[in-house]
Picture 1 (cartoon, one colour):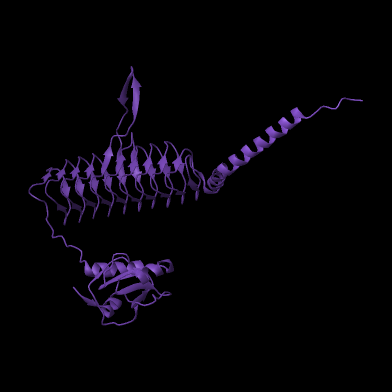
Picture 2: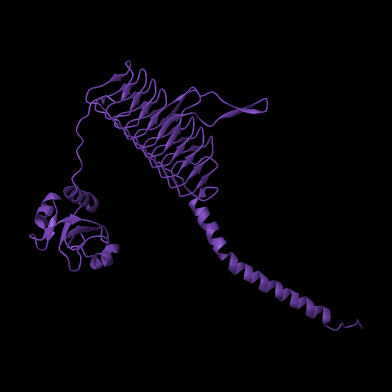
Length: 351
C-alpha cells in the first residue's frame, strides 16, 4: 500500500517540507528503513543517523530539519510515527467469539455481556466476568475469582481462587496470579507450609507482563495499586502492597510484606528484602539491592542500595584505587629506602 507524503502529513496533522507527491510504502526506524519508507528522528542526536539512512522522508519535531530529506514536522514525534506505522500495518480485528463450546465454564459462573471466552479456557465455580472481557485460549480462572469489565487475559494465564481483577486490566501470557506464598514454618524438623488463606487484588488499569508471578496474601490480600505497570518475569511475594502508578521493570523481585508508595520506579533486576517500606516517587536503579526502608523521592542504586550521591562518591573512590595502590607502593619503597640508608649511615659518637 502506497501513500503520498502529503497524505501522511495530513494524517498526523504535521507541517510538510518537501515533495508532497512522494510515494511512501511503509515505515521503519532509521537503521532499517528502505528507500520508499518513512522514518523518525526524535532528537538532534540522531541527525547523523538520519543523514545516513535510506529513508525517503522523516518525521521530526517542530524545531528540527534533516539536511537533505523531505520531512514532516510535528509536536510529538513518537505519537505521529505510531499513527503512520498503524496506517501501514493495520491492527488485526478480532471477531467476537462468544463462549466457545470447547471452553469449560462452570454453571455457577456469571458471565457478563459481550464477553469472549476462547477454546480451552476453564472457568471455575462462582467466577464473575464483567462486560467486554476477553479470555484467550488456555486460561484457567479458578473458583470465586471476580473480573471487572474489559479485562484481557492472554493465553495460559492462571488466576488462583478468589483473585480480584479490576476494570481494564491486561495480563499477558503465562502469568500466574495468586499462587501460594513462599512461607514455611519448622515443625518437628520439617518445613511446613504456613497458612495461605489470602488472595490477590489487582486494581484498575494495571498491566502485568508475561510470565510474571504474584503470590496471595497469608490472611489478607496482596494488592497491586491502580495504574501500575509490571514488566515480564517480575516476582511479587505474599502480603505485598504495591502503590498506584508504579513501574516495575523486568526481573524485579520483591520479597514478602513489602509496601510501596505511588509513582515509584523499579529498574531491571531490582531486589527488595522482606518487610521494607519504599516511599512515594522513588527511583531504584538497575540491580539495586534494597535492604532497608527508602524515604519519599529517594533515588537509590547499588548493592546494598544507597543514595545515588553517596554511591557516586564510592564509585569514584573505587575507580581511583589502582592509582592509589601504585602510589602506596611507591611510598613503601621510599620508606624502605630511607630506612636502609639510616641503618648504613655511620654513627657519630657523642663528644
